View 1 (cartoon, helix red, strand yellow):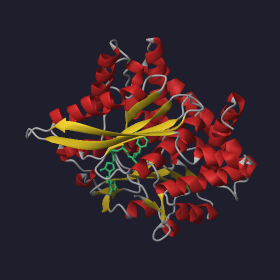
View 2: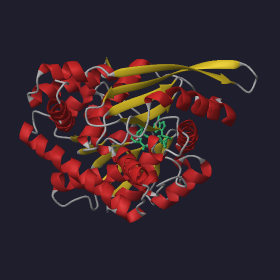
View 3: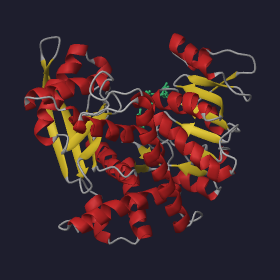
View 4: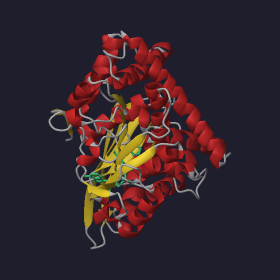
Length: 428
Ligand code: NAD
């Protein structure tokens, strides 16, 4: 179970929820309702392995709350998943979807498996025969809409949407999102949507924090995968920032005058790590050093709990931290950094570009009408900007020195769910 400053991830999420309910002045019953999921489904999935033997995998789908619309959230394939972690992730999805104004509740699924240890045939059977078939009675475009998460990808979504469509007797594209580009509304924006959202949040926050904006601001990025590359290398640079450091799991490179990102990406693609990038003025750094560099903006885009009070929070020099990863900052570290005036743009806001893109894909699927790349990106950006403005207004109303941006985002998220439950009646 992942720990954030000594507490489990679920405890930490519930603490923030409790604080948001106090800050927003909502009735205590709201906590009673939102601190536990509406439904937990456990499935045991037999798969005929390549060696001819049956292996049974345990999977979950946690359906946390659907006051605002169908449950929505990814499916994780990871050997260490637990039900408690799945509940925490589903709970966060309820707040992330609400915060971004989406017509969704929150859900999350998981199977305890290391997908890298399965053959393609075993993985397909687990995804298709197991998860999609076992959960078919509980999901659907207006019920619960899964998507990829750690260990799952568009290919797995394609197998699942195919299986669900076969069970239904007709194509049902809107039951899974983040499908491969060839299928129903596939769009190049999909690949960079989360990173684009990270960059938009950084750009807007920079305007407020420094007046002049993001041009020339120095950036360090931990993680050079989907979020780190598209958020940092591509969009932040395109918006005028100067990316000076990037790392991957092996370590990274730093050049105070700025990296040639296209070259770094080419080296990563060719050799598997950015560590092999070698240019004058560039030196190697570790994954601890990247967090403490003298930069304006820090983008943790790899793992959780990397910024923690025990070690590095006091050494961080960036004034703006943009959480590309989920949960990179421990609760204690956040307190320390907030008291020093550092702005932390929280994960449920800063990395929501992916789920907002999933919403656009789902809308396209429901109407069988598809937008081009520019139209899709403009719609994505409009939704992200609306969220940004609402969070900043809420933060300033609550008091920027007493309340963190994460707490303000939670209040904003709870507000919509509370009002939906109240006006629907029968909930609260
Ligand atoms: P990815 O697998 O594409 O990339 C992860 C990167 O982190 C890789 O470059 C890897 O080398 C690096 N990495 C691994 N271990 C590391 C370590 N010990 N130190 C530094 N770097 C390390 O993953 P991703 O999709 O970019 O996801 C990154 C984070 O963003 C995760 O926390 C994920 O939950 C979160 N996130 C992703 C999306 C999305 O759409 N992909 C959406 C929301 C949140």
